[in-house]
Length: 188
Image 1: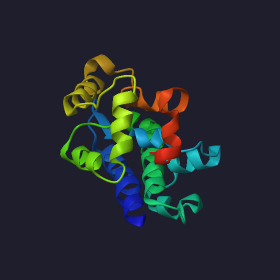
Image 2 (image 1 turned 180 degrees about the horizontal axis):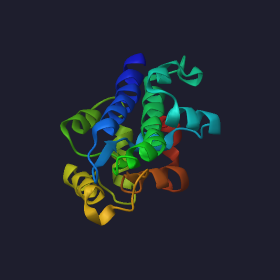
Image 3 (image 1 turned 135 degrees about the vertical axis):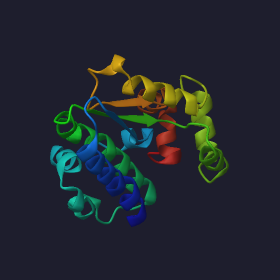
Image 4 (image 1 turned 90 degrees about the horizontal axis):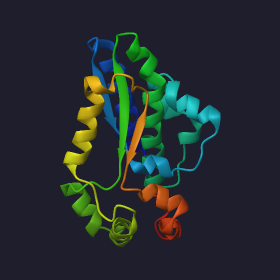
């Protein structure tokens, strides 16, 4: 779990911080998070603020990140932290005339996703794909198209925002026919 938090939470926070020091005026950054962060239970306001604004070097020592019960939970906290970090750092980026946003994709067909679809949670993922409103996985090009728009001059008013693009899977997970997956797959 420490490796997941170190790479996915701390590493991303460090990238945001360091790029924020050198980003050119008019620049734009995109952090790729995950739908998984949207499936984590609601955090207390203090936890949200700490994930968004704690000094990068203190992130891994936040009390609520200690003793997480499984790797999925560590991943979810990391990805929620990425989204919150983007919101928490957009003011600093704006001081340099730059924008910062995140994209939270669902299952995107990549070599890693193909492996996941064949792994221990593969049945649940395949059901999610066939029963989500879009009835399919996304493509890398679709994520790239959204990123290109967010980085373009057409999106100059968009900063500090997260874009969930998962074919409606998270909406269905909470309010639709995918609710049964909460019992079968945990909170993936």
